[in-house]
Length: 212
Image (cartoon, rainbow, N blue to C red; front, side, top):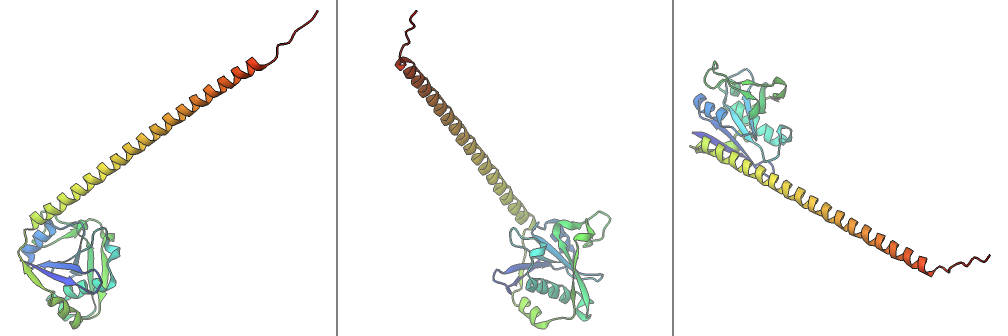
């Protein structure tokens, strides 16, 4: 089971989701999307919360209001964190999550530590948590199928982009060829006119008679 929430504090709402337990967290780690940002309470046990960015966005594009929503949701889903003030929430792109065979269930590391960001949470904001809880939905998604569908769409988009690029290159080559042909035709025409003009001048010049 996966819990889904909607952050509607900005004009274009965001989807936030998390697993029910550490075993489901394993699937979320495995089948995450490049658009996903992972959140967790720093140095404490908590839910693995994911924010799905809009297409084309990066971690630096997360609106402040949405970041607060994610941080509050993580804090609220931490046994220790929800009772503690002044905690840190770490977050990083899903692509930066590192999972090795010797790690416990639900445990992860990072490929690049400097890509991990921190947001401080002073205290729980009940109004924010209650608003998010009202949007909560329980689903049983086929994460593998959803990931494959997403990846297939991306492959098709890239294929279409490559085809469009090749079409433009072909059109540009055709245009250049046509311009070159026009240039040669014009050059030949000018040469022909020049020859005709020279011939006319030659025949019109008076003949000089030399007397001895």
